[in-house]
Amino acid sequence: MALSIATWNINSVRLRMPLVEHLLVNWQPDILCLQETKCPDDQFPSAPLKKLGYKYIEMHGQKGYHGVATISRLPLTELTDRRNYCGVGDARHLSVVFAIGGKTVRLHNFYVPAGGDEPDRTINPKFGHKLDFVDEMKLLHAEAEAGISSILVGDLNIAPLEHDVWSHKQLLKIVSHTPVETDGLTTVMTGGAWVDLMRQHTPPPEKLYTWWSYRAKDWAAVDRGRRLDHIWSSADLAAKLLRVDILREARGWERPSDHVPVIAHFEL
Image (cartoon, rainbow, N blue to C red):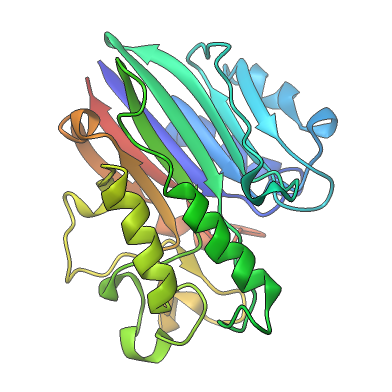
């Protein structure tokens, strides 16, 4: 049985709803996880999504900032979790449970703090918040629940590997690729028995990017990207992975997000 799961930092779901609809119509993932929705739950645009067959929608939003939402054609159970990471009230996590192909799966949807511009927590509280958030993520384990497989997706705002950025040397002191961040995210993954699905079939040294800055006048020609968006899973699901698609063309759509959708395809 086929399963496809997409993740996308949409950078305002109401502003870019036509792009969301375009993705759902043309790529038809079974589940779409959005980040940076910037939308309170009571104002989330559910109606057009349900009209397209995505009847199951869970969200964790707030006004003007952050926010995550999981949109599904598959029924979602009542075991929904919205964790308050770092205890500051940000809407940055949502997990749901669904069943398919004889498996029960918990799907985590994350929006990790960007961390500001200065990689020093003594002068930049946003960077300290990011490091604390990642430390708290180390408590997650892909095999934490007996009989339940796991998938973790989202904008993790860290490019962990040398070939996840356009220039490893030039970005070592730039937030999203500093050693303290990359080491922290690697510990989350290895300590939690997570498999990096995007690198399973496309190992280094091949470059992989999911984000291109708005500041670049010609993002495609300059191609100074970073892999900030991720899809991980427990080992049993990793063995069922067919491929992962990075929809680079979405960066060139009208009024685009600076992130592009990533879609993992499984055969269960």
